[in-house]
Image (cartoon, rainbow, N blue to C red):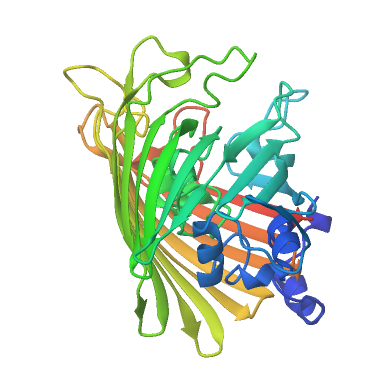
Length: 422
């Protein structure tokens, strides 16, 4: 396996042969634009145009032919794409015994970490959709996520209503414009928990609900009512329907400051829900702050990301578990800061991030909240607009990383990934 992984030196040597950055081509087919028109630096990081396209519900058309009539305007063809990730991961934990399945310490080849079929784009002049089907799902289920944004334009703002369901991307799937990891699928680095405080606290991620949002040039505000369950009430699927008792409130500003385009906001999640068929409700409570700044250092693109997230401990009175701090007897919280720099525009990107975190678990002797810190380095090399090689390496430290007998704690993790979309 080591022989097929490009070293950083090999990446540097091959730079002259690699143009542009990767993306999801379903929307490129609809708009008739290159993937890099919507993406800053590399996929899936969105630039200002990409955020506007997403905020308008994926409805913008380009040169592609349309089928039109009274109250009808749809693309002549349904726009599709496949996104595939092939990963190799290795850490320092204990190797598996002979004959057993390989552990991360042995080095794991993960083929189809993501292998998704996407359909998306215009449904009508002011309605769009995004469908994700997991082609490698265990058990044969295809649907992984779906949303149907309905956009209402006024002179003051765009208003959008988004019914949605997702198996793993949480309530932020309804409406989010940041690429810093506020929503799991839109993150600038593959190691999501190490580079995003919000993802560090993330739970199982299943959610079904409705988002109401408003956006203008100054920013956006969104309210999501959801249940922490996936595809509730699915026809013939035996999936129960639960009350949507959870809330996500989000407000963000999108100004231009000193040549940098910002997305900076605050969000609060609260409420209760019956997650995964549980007989008792759980709490969905978290507060987070985030900053994304996209600009340039000299002639090359630079993005900066910072987040702080806190999820309260289990309520000692009700005993209800917080979905974002499962079993925590203290508050779970994290701060992350990172930067991504395009050493060679649209080709080679180098990044780094630092995480300072408390796990929510308490040391039984000192009663101190266990710490869990990480330093991460990233490399993204774009072979072509829709194929990229990734290297992420994280080093961990903190009181939660203490060894136990015969089980070394995870102190480092390296990921090599080939990502392709077509």
